[in-house]
Length: 385
Ligand code: ACO
Image 1: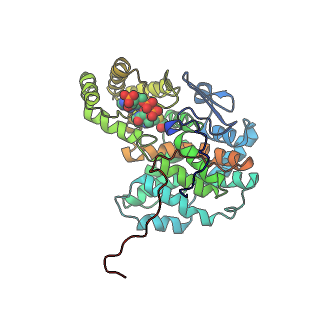
Image 2: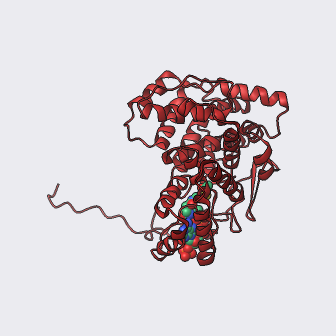
Image 3: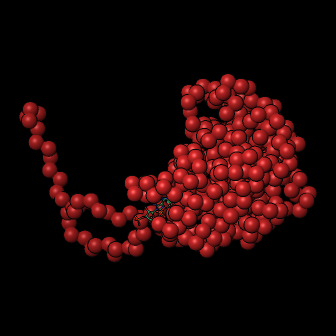
Protein backbone atom coordinates (compact mmCIF):
# COMPACT_ATOMS: atom_id res chain seq x y z
CA UNK A 1 0.00 0.00 0.00
CA UNK A 2 1.37 3.47 -0.85
CA UNK A 3 0.11 6.96 -0.11
CA UNK A 4 -0.23 7.71 -3.83
CA UNK A 5 -3.78 8.42 -4.95
CA UNK A 6 -5.43 5.34 -6.41
CA UNK A 7 -8.81 4.74 -7.92
CA UNK A 8 -10.93 3.62 -4.94
CA UNK A 9 -12.32 0.08 -5.13
CA UNK A 10 -16.03 -0.15 -5.79
CA UNK A 11 -17.63 -0.89 -2.42
CA UNK A 12 -18.76 -4.52 -2.62
CA UNK A 13 -21.87 -5.92 -0.96
CA UNK A 14 -21.11 -6.93 2.60
CA UNK A 15 -23.08 -9.31 4.82
CA UNK A 16 -21.70 -9.71 8.37
CA UNK A 17 -21.09 -13.37 9.16
CA UNK A 18 -21.78 -14.13 5.47
CA UNK A 19 -25.50 -14.26 6.39
CA UNK A 20 -27.57 -14.99 3.31
CA UNK A 21 -24.51 -15.16 1.04
CA UNK A 22 -24.48 -17.94 -1.56
CA UNK A 23 -20.89 -19.19 -1.30
CA UNK A 24 -21.07 -22.11 -3.73
CA UNK A 25 -23.24 -24.72 -5.39
CA UNK A 26 -24.03 -28.16 -4.03
CA UNK A 27 -26.05 -31.15 -5.15
CA UNK A 28 -25.79 -32.83 -1.77
CA UNK A 29 -28.23 -31.15 0.56
CA UNK A 30 -30.97 -28.54 0.58
CA UNK A 31 -31.94 -26.65 3.73
CA UNK A 32 -35.40 -25.14 3.29
CA UNK A 33 -35.70 -22.11 5.62
CA UNK A 34 -39.32 -23.15 6.16
CA UNK A 35 -38.35 -26.15 8.29
CA UNK A 36 -37.39 -28.56 5.51
CA UNK A 37 -34.28 -30.62 4.79
CA UNK A 38 -33.47 -32.91 1.89
CA UNK A 39 -30.47 -35.11 1.10
CA UNK A 40 -29.97 -35.31 -2.68
CA UNK A 41 -33.71 -34.67 -3.11
CA UNK A 42 -34.93 -37.15 -0.48
CA UNK A 43 -36.92 -35.73 2.43
CA UNK A 44 -35.12 -36.13 5.75
CA UNK A 45 -38.37 -37.12 7.49
CA UNK A 46 -38.82 -40.12 5.23
CA UNK A 47 -35.18 -41.12 5.47
CA UNK A 48 -35.15 -40.78 9.27
CA UNK A 49 -38.04 -43.23 9.47
CA UNK A 50 -36.95 -45.80 6.89
CA UNK A 51 -33.20 -45.63 6.15
CA UNK A 52 -30.12 -46.51 8.16
CA UNK A 53 -26.98 -44.40 8.49
CA UNK A 54 -24.94 -46.47 6.04
CA UNK A 55 -27.59 -45.91 3.35
CA UNK A 56 -27.56 -42.16 3.97
CA UNK A 57 -23.76 -42.02 3.93
CA UNK A 58 -23.77 -43.87 0.58
CA UNK A 59 -26.37 -41.45 -0.79
CA UNK A 60 -24.43 -38.39 0.35
CA UNK A 61 -21.15 -39.67 -1.07
CA UNK A 62 -22.35 -41.26 -4.29
CA UNK A 63 -25.45 -39.28 -5.23
CA UNK A 64 -27.97 -42.14 -5.49
CA UNK A 65 -29.49 -44.65 -3.10
CA UNK A 66 -27.68 -48.01 -3.07
CA UNK A 67 -29.19 -51.28 -4.25
CA UNK A 68 -29.41 -53.99 -1.57
CA UNK A 69 -26.12 -55.44 -2.76
CA UNK A 70 -24.37 -52.07 -2.98
CA UNK A 71 -25.51 -51.25 0.55
CA UNK A 72 -24.22 -54.56 1.86
CA UNK A 73 -20.85 -54.05 0.18
CA UNK A 74 -20.63 -50.45 1.40
CA UNK A 75 -21.52 -51.46 4.99
CA UNK A 76 -18.87 -54.18 4.88
CA UNK A 77 -16.29 -51.75 3.50
CA UNK A 78 -17.04 -49.35 6.37
CA UNK A 79 -16.84 -52.12 8.98
CA UNK A 80 -13.53 -53.33 7.55
CA UNK A 81 -11.96 -49.88 7.91
CA UNK A 82 -12.86 -49.23 11.55
CA UNK A 83 -9.66 -50.31 13.31
CA UNK A 84 -7.09 -47.62 14.16
CA UNK A 85 -3.34 -47.86 13.62
CA UNK A 86 -1.65 -48.80 16.91
CA UNK A 87 0.33 -45.54 16.76
CA UNK A 88 -2.92 -43.54 16.93
CA UNK A 89 -4.07 -45.57 19.96
CA UNK A 90 -0.68 -44.90 21.52
CA UNK A 91 -1.04 -41.17 20.86
CA UNK A 92 -4.43 -41.18 22.62
CA UNK A 93 -2.78 -42.78 25.65
CA UNK A 94 -0.24 -39.93 25.71
CA UNK A 95 -2.83 -37.14 25.81
CA UNK A 96 -3.63 -35.59 29.19
CA UNK A 97 -6.52 -37.38 30.93
CA UNK A 98 -8.60 -34.19 30.92
CA UNK A 99 -8.46 -33.82 27.11
CA UNK A 100 -11.92 -33.06 25.75
CA UNK A 101 -13.12 -35.84 23.39
CA UNK A 102 -13.55 -33.26 20.59
CA UNK A 103 -9.87 -32.32 20.92
CA UNK A 104 -8.96 -36.00 20.92
CA UNK A 105 -11.06 -36.59 17.82
CA UNK A 106 -9.52 -33.61 16.00
CA UNK A 107 -6.01 -34.78 16.90
CA UNK A 108 -6.92 -38.32 15.83
CA UNK A 109 -8.10 -37.17 12.39
CA UNK A 110 -4.90 -35.26 11.91
CA UNK A 111 -2.69 -38.16 12.97
CA UNK A 112 -4.53 -40.63 10.73
CA UNK A 113 -3.56 -38.65 7.60
CA UNK A 114 -0.09 -40.07 6.94
CA UNK A 115 -1.36 -43.64 7.38
CA UNK A 116 -3.69 -43.29 4.39
CA UNK A 117 -2.04 -44.49 1.14
CA UNK A 118 -4.37 -42.22 -0.88
CA UNK A 119 -3.63 -39.09 1.16
CA UNK A 120 -2.46 -36.85 -1.67
CA UNK A 121 -4.53 -38.35 -4.47
CA UNK A 122 -7.54 -36.03 -4.88
CA UNK A 123 -9.17 -38.00 -7.68
CA UNK A 124 -12.85 -38.84 -7.19
CA UNK A 125 -12.24 -42.54 -6.54
CA UNK A 126 -9.39 -41.95 -4.08
CA UNK A 127 -11.50 -39.36 -2.25
CA UNK A 128 -14.35 -41.88 -1.89
CA UNK A 129 -11.89 -44.43 -0.47
CA UNK A 130 -10.62 -41.87 2.04
CA UNK A 131 -14.18 -40.88 2.93
CA UNK A 132 -15.03 -44.50 3.78
CA UNK A 133 -11.96 -44.72 6.02
CA UNK A 134 -12.72 -41.43 7.75
CA UNK A 135 -16.39 -42.26 8.38
CA UNK A 136 -15.47 -45.75 9.62
CA UNK A 137 -12.72 -44.56 11.96
CA UNK A 138 -14.64 -41.70 13.56
CA UNK A 139 -16.70 -43.84 15.97
CA UNK A 140 -13.55 -45.82 16.77
CA UNK A 141 -11.64 -42.63 17.60
CA UNK A 142 -14.51 -41.60 19.87
CA UNK A 143 -15.11 -44.95 21.59
CA UNK A 144 -11.50 -46.12 21.90
CA UNK A 145 -10.50 -42.63 23.03
CA UNK A 146 -13.21 -42.66 25.70
CA UNK A 147 -12.14 -46.06 27.03
CA UNK A 148 -8.47 -45.08 27.04
CA UNK A 149 -9.26 -41.89 28.96
CA UNK A 150 -11.03 -43.98 31.59
CA UNK A 151 -8.15 -46.42 31.93
CA UNK A 152 -9.81 -49.22 29.93
CA UNK A 153 -8.56 -51.06 26.86
CA UNK A 154 -10.32 -50.58 23.52
CA UNK A 155 -12.62 -53.46 22.63
CA UNK A 156 -12.00 -55.68 19.61
CA UNK A 157 -13.99 -54.81 16.48
CA UNK A 158 -17.34 -56.54 15.77
CA UNK A 159 -17.62 -56.11 11.97
CA UNK A 160 -21.10 -57.67 11.85
CA UNK A 161 -22.48 -54.61 13.71
CA UNK A 162 -23.49 -51.52 11.78
CA UNK A 163 -22.29 -48.13 12.95
CA UNK A 164 -25.20 -47.34 15.30
CA UNK A 165 -24.93 -50.61 17.24
CA UNK A 166 -21.16 -50.61 17.07
CA UNK A 167 -20.89 -47.24 18.83
CA UNK A 168 -22.72 -48.57 21.91
CA UNK A 169 -20.78 -51.84 21.82
CA UNK A 170 -17.37 -50.19 21.48
CA UNK A 171 -18.13 -47.88 24.40
CA UNK A 172 -19.44 -50.39 26.95
CA UNK A 173 -19.10 -53.89 25.49
CA UNK A 174 -22.85 -54.47 25.19
CA UNK A 175 -24.81 -54.88 21.97
CA UNK A 176 -27.93 -52.73 22.53
CA UNK A 177 -31.57 -53.67 21.93
CA UNK A 178 -32.89 -53.19 18.39
CA UNK A 179 -34.98 -50.15 19.36
CA UNK A 180 -31.85 -48.37 20.60
CA UNK A 181 -30.00 -49.13 17.36
CA UNK A 182 -32.98 -47.80 15.36
CA UNK A 183 -33.04 -44.65 17.47
CA UNK A 184 -29.31 -44.09 17.00
CA UNK A 185 -29.65 -44.59 13.27
CA UNK A 186 -32.34 -41.90 13.16
CA UNK A 187 -30.15 -39.51 15.16
CA UNK A 188 -27.20 -40.15 12.85
CA UNK A 189 -29.44 -39.53 9.82
CA UNK A 190 -30.68 -36.22 11.24
CA UNK A 191 -27.14 -34.95 11.80
CA UNK A 192 -25.51 -36.27 8.61
CA UNK A 193 -25.51 -33.09 6.52
CA UNK A 194 -26.74 -29.50 6.50
CA UNK A 195 -25.33 -27.79 3.38
CA UNK A 196 -22.92 -24.92 4.12
CA UNK A 197 -23.02 -25.02 7.92
CA UNK A 198 -19.87 -23.62 9.57
CA UNK A 199 -17.95 -26.90 9.89
CA UNK A 200 -18.76 -28.08 6.37
CA UNK A 201 -17.83 -24.69 4.99
CA UNK A 202 -14.51 -24.90 6.86
CA UNK A 203 -13.94 -28.32 5.27
CA UNK A 204 -14.69 -26.93 1.81
CA UNK A 205 -12.40 -23.92 2.28
CA UNK A 206 -9.56 -26.25 3.26
CA UNK A 207 -10.29 -28.72 0.45
CA UNK A 208 -10.47 -25.87 -2.06
CA UNK A 209 -6.76 -25.17 -1.57
CA UNK A 210 -6.23 -28.79 -2.71
CA UNK A 211 -5.16 -29.77 0.78
CA UNK A 212 -6.14 -33.37 1.55
CA UNK A 213 -9.41 -34.70 2.95
CA UNK A 214 -7.89 -35.31 6.40
CA UNK A 215 -6.83 -31.66 6.59
CA UNK A 216 -10.38 -30.64 5.60
CA UNK A 217 -12.03 -32.93 8.16
CA UNK A 218 -9.60 -31.74 10.85
CA UNK A 219 -10.63 -28.13 10.08
CA UNK A 220 -14.28 -29.14 10.18
CA UNK A 221 -13.91 -30.95 13.50
CA UNK A 222 -12.22 -27.93 15.07
CA UNK A 223 -15.06 -25.76 13.82
CA UNK A 224 -17.81 -28.08 15.05
CA UNK A 225 -16.49 -27.86 18.61
CA UNK A 226 -17.66 -24.27 19.17
CA UNK A 227 -20.83 -23.80 21.25
CA UNK A 228 -22.45 -21.65 18.55
CA UNK A 229 -22.32 -24.77 16.34
CA UNK A 230 -22.01 -28.44 17.41
CA UNK A 231 -20.78 -27.64 20.91
CA UNK A 232 -24.31 -26.38 21.69
CA UNK A 233 -25.55 -29.91 22.42
CA UNK A 234 -23.13 -30.26 25.34
CA UNK A 235 -23.96 -26.77 26.62
CA UNK A 236 -27.74 -27.37 26.31
CA UNK A 237 -27.46 -30.28 28.72
CA UNK A 238 -25.77 -28.06 31.32
CA UNK A 239 -28.74 -25.68 30.99
CA UNK A 240 -31.32 -28.47 31.35
CA UNK A 241 -29.48 -29.92 34.36
CA UNK A 242 -29.56 -26.47 35.92
CA UNK A 243 -33.32 -26.02 35.28
CA UNK A 244 -34.18 -29.51 36.63
CA UNK A 245 -38.01 -29.32 36.56
CA UNK A 246 -40.60 -27.98 34.07
CA UNK A 247 -42.03 -25.47 36.59
CA UNK A 248 -38.63 -23.69 36.73
CA UNK A 249 -38.15 -23.45 32.96
CA UNK A 250 -40.00 -20.20 32.23
CA UNK A 251 -38.43 -18.19 35.07
CA UNK A 252 -34.99 -19.62 34.23
CA UNK A 253 -35.39 -18.45 30.62
CA UNK A 254 -36.70 -15.00 31.63
CA UNK A 255 -33.70 -14.50 33.95
CA UNK A 256 -31.26 -15.61 31.25
CA UNK A 257 -32.85 -13.32 28.65
CA UNK A 258 -32.80 -10.39 31.09
CA UNK A 259 -29.05 -10.97 31.40
CA UNK A 260 -28.81 -10.99 27.58
CA UNK A 261 -27.40 -14.54 27.68
CA UNK A 262 -27.18 -16.71 24.57
CA UNK A 263 -29.47 -19.66 25.20
CA UNK A 264 -27.97 -22.86 23.84
CA UNK A 265 -30.20 -24.94 21.59
CA UNK A 266 -32.09 -21.89 20.29
CA UNK A 267 -31.77 -19.84 17.12
CA UNK A 268 -30.50 -20.75 13.69
CA UNK A 269 -28.88 -18.87 10.85
CA UNK A 270 -31.16 -20.36 8.17
CA UNK A 271 -34.30 -21.69 9.86
CA UNK A 272 -36.62 -18.95 10.97
CA UNK A 273 -39.83 -21.03 11.01
CA UNK A 274 -38.49 -24.03 12.93
CA UNK A 275 -35.62 -26.49 12.57
CA UNK A 276 -36.67 -29.41 10.34
CA UNK A 277 -34.98 -31.89 12.68
CA UNK A 278 -36.62 -30.75 15.92
CA UNK A 279 -39.99 -32.56 15.60
CA UNK A 280 -38.23 -35.91 15.05
CA UNK A 281 -35.70 -35.36 17.85
CA UNK A 282 -38.51 -34.20 20.17
CA UNK A 283 -40.44 -37.43 19.54
CA UNK A 284 -37.29 -39.49 20.15
CA UNK A 285 -36.86 -37.66 23.46
CA UNK A 286 -40.51 -38.33 24.38
CA UNK A 287 -40.30 -42.02 23.46
CA UNK A 288 -36.99 -42.46 25.26
CA UNK A 289 -38.31 -40.61 28.32
CA UNK A 290 -41.13 -43.16 28.61
CA UNK A 291 -38.75 -46.09 28.15
CA UNK A 292 -36.22 -44.94 30.77
CA UNK A 293 -38.66 -43.25 33.17
CA UNK A 294 -37.35 -39.74 32.65
CA UNK A 295 -40.33 -37.87 31.27
CA UNK A 296 -39.42 -34.37 32.54
CA UNK A 297 -36.93 -33.37 29.86
CA UNK A 298 -39.47 -32.86 27.06
CA UNK A 299 -41.84 -30.68 29.13
CA UNK A 300 -38.83 -28.58 30.25
CA UNK A 301 -37.77 -28.10 26.62
CA UNK A 302 -41.35 -27.36 25.50
CA UNK A 303 -41.73 -24.71 28.19
CA UNK A 304 -38.43 -23.16 27.09
CA UNK A 305 -39.59 -23.25 23.47
CA UNK A 306 -42.89 -21.50 24.29
CA UNK A 307 -41.13 -18.82 26.34
CA UNK A 308 -38.48 -18.17 23.66
CA UNK A 309 -41.13 -17.99 20.95
CA UNK A 310 -43.16 -15.48 22.99
CA UNK A 311 -40.19 -13.34 24.06
CA UNK A 312 -37.84 -13.39 21.05
CA UNK A 313 -39.65 -15.23 18.24
CA UNK A 314 -36.72 -17.65 18.11
CA UNK A 315 -37.10 -21.36 17.40
CA UNK A 316 -35.36 -24.30 19.06
CA UNK A 317 -32.67 -26.06 17.06
CA UNK A 318 -31.93 -29.79 17.00
CA UNK A 319 -29.33 -29.53 19.76
CA UNK A 320 -31.94 -28.62 22.40
CA UNK A 321 -33.57 -32.06 22.21
CA UNK A 322 -30.39 -33.95 21.26
CA UNK A 323 -28.93 -33.10 24.66
CA UNK A 324 -31.48 -35.01 26.82
CA UNK A 325 -31.65 -37.79 24.20
CA UNK A 326 -27.91 -38.42 24.54
CA UNK A 327 -28.17 -38.25 28.33
CA UNK A 328 -31.02 -40.77 28.39
CA UNK A 329 -29.00 -43.04 26.08
CA UNK A 330 -26.35 -42.86 28.83
CA UNK A 331 -23.68 -41.05 26.85
CA UNK A 332 -21.59 -38.70 29.02
CA UNK A 333 -22.26 -35.04 28.04
CA UNK A 334 -18.75 -34.52 26.67
CA UNK A 335 -19.56 -37.13 23.98
CA UNK A 336 -22.59 -35.16 22.68
CA UNK A 337 -20.59 -33.18 20.12
CA UNK A 338 -18.35 -36.09 19.06
CA UNK A 339 -21.51 -38.14 18.35
CA UNK A 340 -22.71 -35.27 16.15
CA UNK A 341 -19.31 -35.50 14.39
CA UNK A 342 -19.66 -39.29 13.96
CA UNK A 343 -22.58 -38.57 11.68
CA UNK A 344 -21.59 -35.21 10.14
CA UNK A 345 -18.27 -36.66 8.96
CA UNK A 346 -20.30 -38.25 6.14
CA UNK A 347 -21.47 -34.79 5.07
CA UNK A 348 -18.01 -33.26 5.45
CA UNK A 349 -16.48 -35.97 3.24
CA UNK A 350 -19.25 -35.73 0.62
CA UNK A 351 -18.66 -31.97 0.40
CA UNK A 352 -14.89 -32.43 0.06
CA UNK A 353 -15.46 -34.89 -2.79
CA UNK A 354 -17.83 -32.44 -4.49
CA UNK A 355 -15.50 -29.47 -3.90
CA UNK A 356 -12.47 -31.22 -5.37
CA UNK A 357 -14.47 -32.65 -8.29
CA UNK A 358 -15.32 -29.06 -9.38
CA UNK A 359 -12.71 -27.06 -7.56
CA UNK A 360 -12.28 -23.33 -7.34
CA UNK A 361 -10.30 -21.69 -4.55
CA UNK A 362 -12.60 -20.14 -1.93
CA UNK A 363 -11.11 -16.78 -1.15
CA UNK A 364 -13.45 -13.89 -0.29
CA UNK A 365 -12.46 -10.28 0.33
CA UNK A 366 -12.70 -8.30 3.53
CA UNK A 367 -13.89 -4.77 4.01
CA UNK A 368 -10.90 -2.79 5.24
CA UNK A 369 -11.83 -0.58 8.21
CA UNK A 370 -8.33 0.29 9.46
CA UNK A 371 -6.46 3.62 9.28
CA UNK A 372 -6.30 5.46 5.96
CA UNK A 373 -3.01 5.23 4.05
CA UNK A 374 -0.31 7.16 5.91
CA UNK A 375 3.43 7.73 5.38
CA UNK A 376 5.89 5.41 7.09
CA UNK A 377 8.33 7.12 9.43
CA UNK A 378 11.60 5.55 10.54
CA UNK A 379 11.40 5.12 14.33
CA UNK A 380 13.61 7.65 16.16
CA UNK A 381 16.29 5.80 18.09
CA UNK A 382 16.98 7.13 21.60
CA UNK A 383 20.51 5.61 21.84
CA UNK A 384 21.54 7.16 18.57
CA UNK A 385 22.43 3.78 17.04
N1 ACO B 1 -30.30 -16.89 22.69
C1 ACO B 1 -30.60 -15.58 22.84
N2 ACO B 1 -30.66 -14.72 21.82
C2 ACO B 1 -30.41 -15.20 20.59
C3 ACO B 1 -30.11 -16.54 20.36
C4 ACO B 1 -30.05 -17.39 21.47
N3 ACO B 1 -29.75 -18.69 21.32
N4 ACO B 1 -29.91 -16.75 19.04
C5 ACO B 1 -30.10 -15.55 18.45
N5 ACO B 1 -30.39 -14.63 19.40
C6 ACO B 1 -30.68 -13.22 19.18
C7 ACO B 1 -29.43 -12.47 18.79
O1 ACO B 1 -28.73 -12.01 19.93
C8 ACO B 1 -30.01 -11.37 17.98
O2 ACO B 1 -30.59 -10.42 18.86
P1 ACO B 1 -30.44 -8.85 18.58
O3 ACO B 1 -31.02 -8.65 17.20
O4 ACO B 1 -31.21 -8.26 19.67
O5 ACO B 1 -28.98 -8.59 18.62
C9 ACO B 1 -31.17 -12.03 17.27
O6 ACO B 1 -31.56 -13.12 18.07
C10 ACO B 1 -30.90 -12.55 15.87
O7 ACO B 1 -29.85 -13.48 15.92
P2 ACO B 1 -28.93 -13.65 14.65
O8 ACO B 1 -27.88 -12.62 14.73
O9 ACO B 1 -29.73 -13.66 13.39
O10 ACO B 1 -28.34 -15.08 14.85
P3 ACO B 1 -27.16 -15.67 13.97
O11 ACO B 1 -27.71 -16.17 12.71
O12 ACO B 1 -26.00 -14.74 13.89
O13 ACO B 1 -26.69 -16.88 14.89
C11 ACO B 1 -26.77 -18.89 16.05
C12 ACO B 1 -27.25 -18.14 14.82
C13 ACO B 1 -25.24 -18.82 16.17
C14 ACO B 1 -27.18 -20.36 15.92
C15 ACO B 1 -27.41 -18.27 17.29
O14 ACO B 1 -28.82 -18.38 17.20
C16 ACO B 1 -26.91 -18.88 18.58
O15 ACO B 1 -25.89 -18.45 19.10
N6 ACO B 1 -27.61 -19.90 19.14
C17 ACO B 1 -27.17 -20.59 20.32
C18 ACO B 1 -26.13 -21.65 20.00
C19 ACO B 1 -26.74 -22.85 19.32
O16 ACO B 1 -27.75 -23.38 19.76
N7 ACO B 1 -26.09 -23.31 18.27
C20 ACO B 1 -26.52 -24.50 17.52
C21 ACO B 1 -26.90 -24.12 16.14
S1 ACO B 1 -27.63 -25.48 15.24
C22 ACO B 1 -26.35 -26.53 14.93
O17 ACO B 1 -25.21 -26.18 14.88
C23 ACO B 1 -26.71 -27.95 14.76
